[in-house]
Length: 390
Image (cartoon, rainbow, N blue to C red; front, top):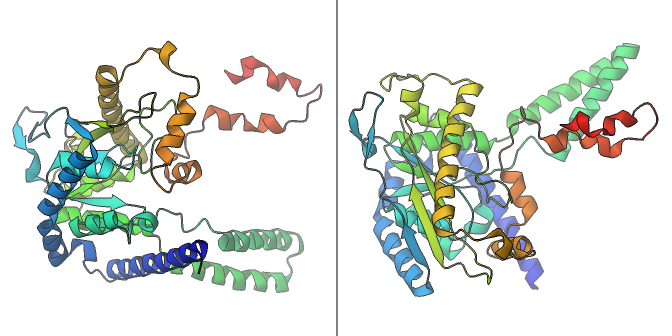
């Protein structure tokens, strides 16, 4: 058996294991049971491995020559709008770091020091590895980031139903109507049987936080490899999760600058101020059934968090990573991307697929994409006038 065949078998095995995990989770949630990650025995076992993992990671970092610079202390207190001083860790905490490099998980765990449960959408590349095994012992919530409704079978079925609808409008044929009804039942049955792990993981996260444990969830979901974005957008559901579980949110920034010789041994971490979304939206933390926030509320909450992250990162860049523009080699960005991507199994397409996209916001490049396919004539040439694109 050659290397390629072994890799195919490995991926098939991991796919089956992930499907089993998703099925067990789905069954637990539907029957109202506690999911594996939130069970008392699981969490007790996780905490048992926390300090051995912490000191192991620290020793590994020292041995490999990386220098970790934690620029401020993890907040222990926060102040309410009435200026009352309260302890941060009297409530569960969601740590929300940015996501940029392979080393960020272990370095963040060392900087935080406290035991936290990690959320990861990278089962395929973490599980069955040495690093993955250590993280699993410490506590990890794996989940499938793929959209389960975005598959070719469902798309074909939906297209067929739409075509039948059009023919029925024209002909009102009883045979076509019967065919449509039968196919619609099959389609709906398929939808019912789909396991939406992206939805289920929110319940897993809620259950873990409701035990009083802390969670680390990457704000950007995937690596930031955009040349002009300090911090990518985050999933709005994070705000609702914090409200549902009475959790505080602590922004954390990780920066691992790469110099012109591709050296990157210095790592900087900085903590932001805790965000209390319950206070922000005037929600009583004693109310058992929490208020469901509007889309605009969640969007506003995420923007506040993103602004803090971007400010923290800018401060690190300004103080520790500033260079003169004229000194940056022309090929630096391409070298940087190649260097970063060589660390893990991702490619740029994998990374972009995992980032959150707000479908209510249309980027300028997408708004004018149709112009690239325009067949010019005297009646539409005005559309290419620059004044129409401002």
